[in-house]
Amino acid sequence: MAIARGVQLSAQFRKQYPGFSLEAVFQVGSGITILFGPSGAGKTTILDCIAGLATPDSGVIQVGGSALFDGSRAINLPPQQRRVGYVFQDLALFPHLTVEENVRYGLAGLPPEFRNLRSQGILERFRIPHLCDRRPGAISGGERQRVALARALVTDPCVLLLDEPLAAIDGATKSKIVEDLRAWNQSHRIPILYVTHSRDEVFALGERVLVIENGRVAAEGTPHDVMSAPRQETVAQLAGFENILAATVVAAHEDRGTMTCRIDGSSVELETPLVRADAGTRLKVGIRAGDILLSSVQPVGLSARNLIPGKVVSLIVRDVIVEITVDCGVEMVAHLTLAARHSLQLLPGSTVWLVIKTHSCRLMAQ
Amino acid sequence: MNWQAFWLTIRLAVLVAAILVVIGMPVAYWLTYSRWRSKFLVEAMVALPIVLPPTVLGFYVLMALGPHSPLGRWWQGVTGHTLAFTFTGLVIGSILYSLPFAVQPFTTSFSAVDRRLLAASATLGASSWRTFLRVILPQSVPGVIAGIALSFAHTMGEFGVVLMVGGNIPGVTRTVSIDIYDQVEALNYRAANQTALVLLGIAFAVLCAVYGLNRKAWVVGPWR
Image 1 (cartoon, chains in turn yellow, green):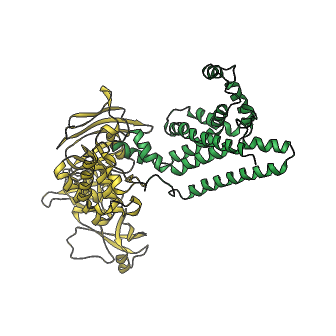
Image 2: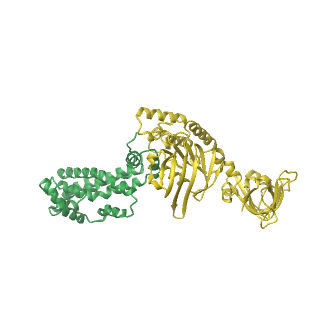
Image 3: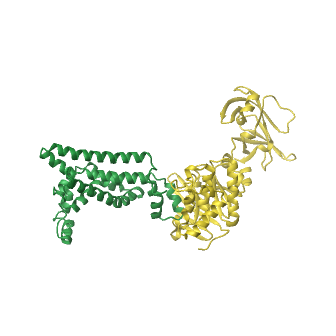
C-alpha cells in the first residue's frame, strides 16, 4: 500500500440527528489542527464520521484524494480499511492486555520480527519502553496517554484524530507529550485533528483552529485570528468572555485610536479600541473577568483609562478564584485570588473601583 | 447410590454445556449487537424454558423428535431408529431446556464490554472476529464461566424434560433425578437421600464458583 505523505484531509458532509444537524465543511493539511467548541457542538461526531464509526447522511470525506466516504458513489469504507488513527477521550486502552500488547494490537497483519521492530520503535519514540509489561491500570495518566498515542501511530495512519486526549493531565506533562507528537509528525507529516474545549490548549498547540458551533464550522484561522478578535458573539463567549455588554458608540477619537461607548441601560462609559463605527452604532463589548482589576480606594496615576465605581453584590469562591459580581449601573463579573480578596477586605456592599484597560475591551458586531 | 445414573447424568451435563458454548455464543453475540427492532422476540423465545413447565417443553420436544414429525422421520431414515427415548434425544431436549442459562450470562457479559474498546479495535484494523476473540471474550470470562457452570448445573438437575423425552431406560436415559424419584416410589428413602445429597452438593459448589468468580472478575483468564 502506498504511504501518503503531506496529505490533505477534506471533509464535506452532513448528518442529521433528532434536534441536531451536523454540517461539516473543511480542509486541513498536515500538522495539528484544533477543533474547538463547546461540548455538544458536534466535534466528536465529526471525528467518528472520519473514522467510520458513524455514517454521514451525505457528502464526501477524502484523504489525499481517495474517498473514505462518498454518499453519491455509495463509498463507505469500514473503519478497518480507513487507516485513521483515533485516540479516544477515555483512551480505550485494552485493560486486559499489557502496554506492549496494546501497542502491537494494530500490527496483526505483519510478520513477527517486523512487529517487534515497529512496536519497539514507537515505544522508544514516546519514551515508554520500560512500561512494556505493565497493564494500563498500573501506569499513570500521562503514561496512558503516551501508550494510546503509540498504539494509534504504530499502524502508520494517514490521519490522526485526538478527542480531548490530554484534558485530564497537567500542563507540564501535556506539553512534553505534545512535543513528542510534533517530533513524530515532523517525519510523517499527516493531518492531526485535535478536539478540545480548552482555550489554553488552543493557544498552546494550534497552528490552525476550526471553531465548531452547533454542528457547523463557525470560524477558522490561526488561534490569534479566531480567538483575539472575535466577530461573532458566540465565539467570544467560548473564548472566555464572562462579561458581554450591549453598548452604543458615543464618540470616536481617531487621533487617539479609541472610542467612547456607553453601556446600554446605564451611564457607564467605556473607552474602547477604535473600530469602524459611527456614533450611535450599537455593538457589544466583551471583557474577560480576569482582565478586570479591583481597587478598594479610588486609584490615581494609572495608565488604564476605565475607572468605574460600583458596589459588590456577591462573592463566590470557585476553587482558588473568587468570582465577584459588582453593580456599577450594570453588573460586571471579575476574578481575583483568595489572597487579594483578603487584603482588600471585600464584602457584599463594599465600594470598589473596577480598572479596565482600553484593549481589554473587545468589540463585536451586535 | 446408582453410579450408572450418576455418570450418565455427568456425561449429559458436560456434553450439553459444551454444545451450549458453541450455540450460545453466537446467539448471545447477535442479541448483544443486533439493531433489529424485533429482537425482543428472540429474547423471549430464548427465555421461554425459564418459565415454561418442563413437561410442556418435554411434550413438544417429544412430538418434534417422534416418528410423526419431519425431523423425527428424517432422523429415522438416516439412522434407522427414532430420536425419542435415546440419549441423543435427551441431549437435544436438554440443550433447549438449558439454553437461557448459557445465553443470558453470555449476553450480560458481552454487553458490559465498553463499546469504545470495540471502536478502538476496529480503527486498529481488527475484524469483528478478531475483536471478539481478543477483546470481547477476554473481558467476558466471568460471564462465560457462569454460563457454562449454570447450564451444566441446570442440566444435572432436570427431571420433567428427561421423563417426557427419554423415559426411564437404565444406562440410556435414566438420570439421577429420575433415579431419586424411583427410589422414593420404592420407599427406599435412604438411597434417595444419598443421591439427593450428592446433587445438592454439586449444585451448591457450582453456584459458589459462579458467584465467587463474578465478584473477582479477573481471577481466571486466558492471558498471563
